[in-house]
Length: 101
Image (cartoon, rainbow, N blue to C red; front, side, top):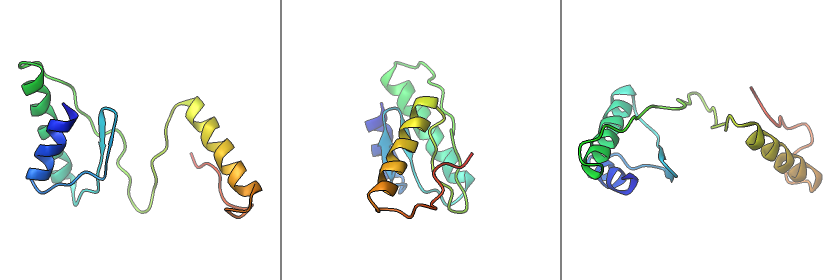
């Protein structure tokens, strides 16, 4: 379903930045483009699932340099461990912000 949706997005001139399990990361020009992608994904779901409507939503809209943050507690802990390790080996400054809510 996601492959079909991604192919159709490319055909529509919207190239996803990344496919993530059951989601798409993309840089959109505007909300109209986001809605177009959602409809492409809904239609791919109907086509693959013989007419069944598959729910589609924009999980996170990131603006102004914001970055994706996984909401799960386990993912937050994993991010913290990775960032602390990078600080310890000198790959990032010690005063770097590790997590922003």
